[in-house]
Length: 182
Image 1 (tube, rainbow, N blue to C red):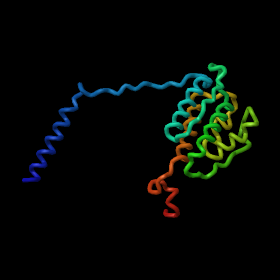
Image 2: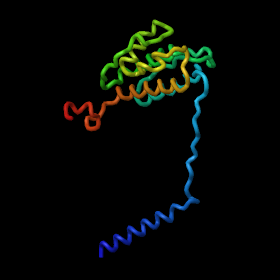
Image 3: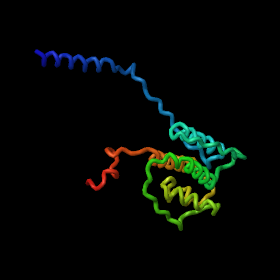
Image 4: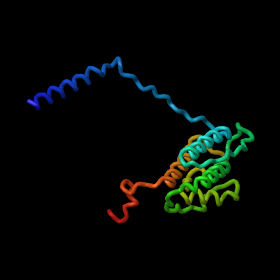
């Protein structure tokens, strides 16, 4: 008797699902395409992005980063050197929040291209810590400016590594913390 009753309940539930999903009541997802603007990232766009990154650092890491405040010409393109300076500044503010130290990344020195040789040590630091791709546009690019796509990749790569270094991983779900258990 009990199996008969559960079969009837299951049939009624399936039937109610079928009736409740009519085509008239389903909402279609409206996809808004995102298109990258042609040309390099401007100082104003970079300042807005770094402002949001500072907000993330403030709310998640509880690290207060003072605004840089040196956007002299907002419509001028930001240079790769300026991005390196900003990322280094943010990295240094995040260091006290680090919970783990990751393996250092080997730097391919002959491939590095910089406008300002004084920033070489900053770029090497970011590459060694894995915060910047060692073959990315920021490290090996041939032009002075950086495009929208490459700027987004650079900031995303940086934030991913900062997130990795500031949060203690779970030994249950992190394979490299399992030791020699293969």
